Amino acid sequence: MKSKFRKNKGRRQFIKEILAGTVGLLLFRHKKASAITSPVTTNRLRPPGAVSERIFPSKCIRCGRCVEVCPYKCIVPLDIKEGIYAGTPLIYVEDIPCYLCMKCVEVCPTGTLQPIKQNETRMGLAVIDKHACKTWNEELALCRTCYNVCPFKETAIKLDQLRPVVIEEYCTGCGLCTHGCPVVTKDGKKAINIEPIYSQGPVKW
Image (tube, rainbow, N blue to C red; front, side, top):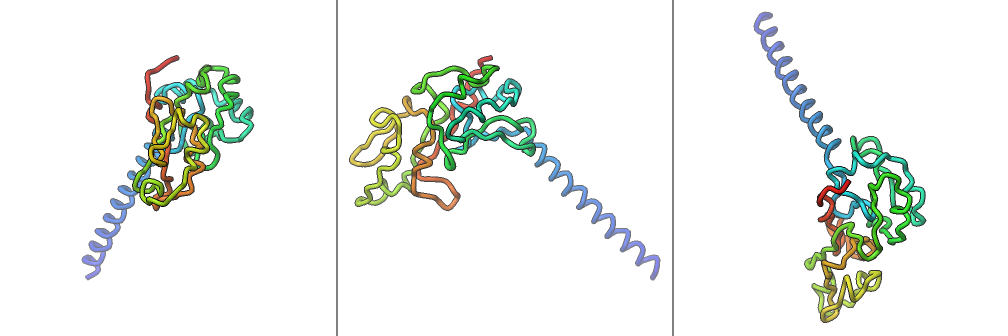
């Protein structure tokens, strides 16, 4: 009986160790993937003039000048848990959008944020979720917030029968429309969101 008990106990201990090792390996891989995966995603954007995300973490020296000079405090440095991206600047447009003051590009010492005109900035592209947008779904809805707050209204965004339409080639991706949008979907997004479609563009040192 004792021999059988020891065998069962040993078998259970072996299974526990295998499971613990598997879970540990999965957690390690997840953390490793998080440490090297770009933080730039929907409504999480680099400041104006940013170089391609493929070289951004190696070109940025984490000096914090862009963070310090921003009068709207929209640029924040990423913390240590972001791995190789720790210390690099990011804008959370739902919290504070970019007001395109362009001060950050003036102080960047390495060209990670390259000089660019306000209207030529391409931080991302505003994309309207027509299923969530009240104006696109309700005939009597008269919300025009995204249109009203856009610094380039009638150029980057227009109204088609009172419904907002983004003009892709002129959208700067500043996020003012996302910040102002009163709609919040179940997944935490807005009815208009900024997609960083230019973040993996051609490398320019």
